[in-house]
Length: 124
Image (cartoon, rainbow, N blue to C red; front, side, top):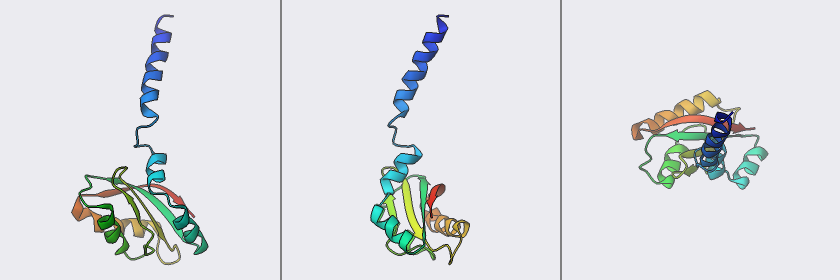
């Protein structure tokens, strides 16, 4: 009976430290979410994609956005990068390319910088 309260206390201690870690999916998406960009993408019938960036980010967010914009299929001006949260958001036209093809192209462009992408979410 005495172990139950200890287990509950231990779980609460771990839960409180995980609430604002900055690494959960919602935090990463929020770091690169831009309502105007999402509204514009929806008006164009484009898809907004959110990625986690894995690896050490050495470039500025502006430099990474420039690299991302050079990838075929990425809507120019749509890239949002957060170095602090290691996150990326872009929009693309699903009639022109597929999500797997876009992700593959983005990863090829970022690989020389030691960065990989993990798909977090999409908004159609």
